[in-house]
Length: 601
Image 1 (cartoon, one colour):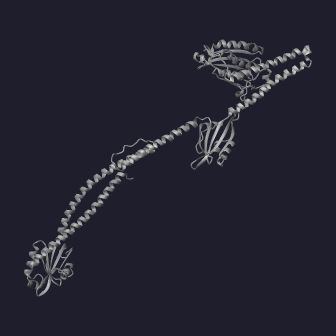
Image 2 (tube, one colour):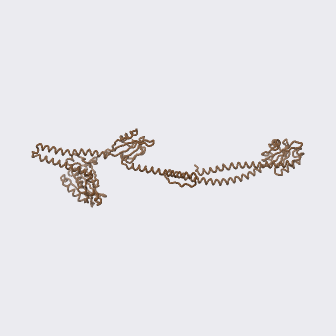
Image 3 (spheres, rainbow, N blue to C red):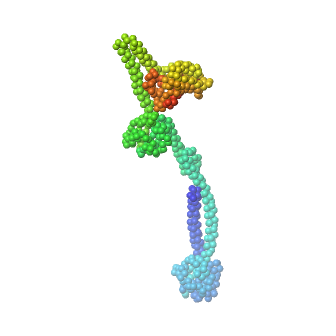
């Protein structure tokens, strides 16, 4: 188990304290022992001086017969009464007298170090264990001259046990004092280490909070030490990190919001053609079932070879490449592709922007079709008028049988030109937002009834039956009666024209929240699915030949769409070939405030 800072500091303090106390005890004991030994030798030297002041009789020393001289033994006994051991040694090492042992049983002392020093220098001393009494002793020996004989050595010994006892008492007191010091200083060390450990733990917990995104400051201790300075520094660092991360987060969120709300598709790839980022617009444009993951290979996501080739050109060194791609089959969508090189630090890649130009291409197609259709629509009646006029001028005017028929044909084509011109002028006004509407409160039942009455005669001529199904208690609508009648009449006319004899046409109306929905259904030929998105375009015909046969200009549904949208409504179609068609359009429910604002246009 890993030790924390508290135990590390505690062990360090204890180890340091023990490392100090042990040498103190060791050296104190040695110094005290040396002091006691020095004092012992001084005591023995003092006793030796006293003994030398009253030495034994020379006759007793001259005899040099161990344990035979009573006066010598008495002298030795008197000195030993002070608690020391006294020994008299002859020059040849024989023990003449001893206060604690029988000299005759003692071995020769010529080899004792203190004896040798005494004979050689006059005195000698040593500390050693006595072979006679088997105890540690302090020995002090002095040479005593003997008149008329060889000198002898007077040796005085003090038991070392006394010193050991004193040292043991000292050691016990020292250990007790050391224990008290150890406990006091250890407790202080533990308190200090606990305080330091707690403060370090708080700083550690604070750093973890900062790493997890919690930048609340820590309360710095007013201790004035390095840990307080560290806490202040960490608070400042956390505050700066908080500001920096907040700024980066705001910028990231803003960038994400901008890129996420863009209808254009935006993606970033690295030099290895792996996706780093893609916004929802990019996913929608490429119709991806699963959102692409960062790091996915671009070739696994994109199927358009033009886009892949543009990316590869940029990654090879081209600064910018522009191209165009097409998606979808039945409903094609066109996108302008811009691929630009991007470099950030040591990372390089490319940014892809897909801009939807479907409406632009659609407008270009509508413009081309419009010019072609207008030219064609004008050319047919003008050619007929011109041909029959030239025929009349060439002499047919004098032919009573054909001139009336020729003039009727010219009149019919001129009326067709007038209708086409009127429709074009109306569309032009609608495009320029110069269509004046007189929004009034309009009852649905009465309005529908009047439109159906107008359509009954041509329907009856084709053996068609028109039925009406209105929801009960329909609310009044806000509409321009004349303009809305054009819309409904146009839908009824189309239903009559494209429904075979014996078919049925149904007109219904129902209330939805805030609006009334009108439905014109027929059992006619139907409209192919591929043509349905375009039937509200100008001059677009599903069956162009039949449309011209019935005298249509190809602008009716386009005008109807403009008029419905001018009423703030919607128009759409649902159809299946051979099963008939259902045209829907909505009109807002009457509201006096909204009606007055629209009439002020």
